[in-house]
Image 1 (cartoon, one colour):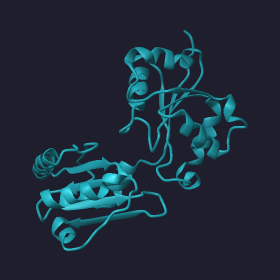
Image 2: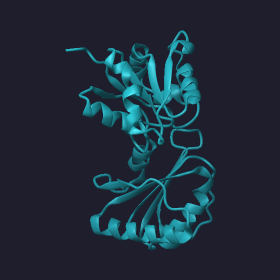
Image 3: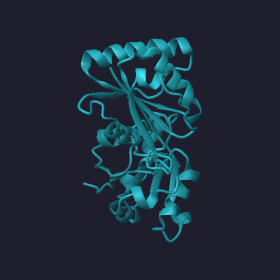
Amino acid sequence: MPVTGKLFLIPNVIAESTQEEVIPASVNHILPTISHFLAEDIRTARRYLSSLKIYPSIEALHFRVLNKDTKADELPELMSPLNEGLNLGVISESGCPGIADPGSLAVDYAHRNKIQVVPLVGPSSIFLALMASGLNGQRFAFHGYLPVESKEVAQTIKELEKESKQKNQTQIFIETPYRNNSIFDHFVKNLHSETRLTVAIDLTGKDERVQTQSIRDWTNQKTSWPKSPAIFLFLA
């Protein structure tokens, strides 16, 4: 039986210039065994690996694009180094591959083809925010991005608040930095006064801030959020 390589899921930083603080030494020990990579953006993947200072030459590495537009019939070619006995790494643009990330496409292919998948330890803004929120960490759901239209946003928030109360479930959202204040205002406007809302900004970064309060308390203070990566969580 031919020997196949392993699919390694390689974490990335979630705040700039934090490699030494958040990327474990174990990741740096494993990376030299990998010279083929899948990434959403090859330029940023090269820059990230270069910043770790573990390869004598980044130019000797091989990169292919794996993103949300990748089709299923493209995967056999993208994953072909594994069939040659070579290890293959999936690098997320931010945080951990496969979590709110197209790396799950490669992982699903690997499982279907009996290829060993090895997740490496690294930062995830979703789980760091949940850890620091004080909300229910036993039952939670990640919903990605809220809709763009105000009416849809309001309806979605109210429906998920009802689910949160019924199931005692923390609801988790990610947002693009330029919408932080808009989305925060939607939460304050549409959630009940006793619902607890957490805002986690710039996790692991120099401006990191995590704050949990009831909507009543949020309403009673003037708040403005920077255009930094944010996670929003609430529990009714």
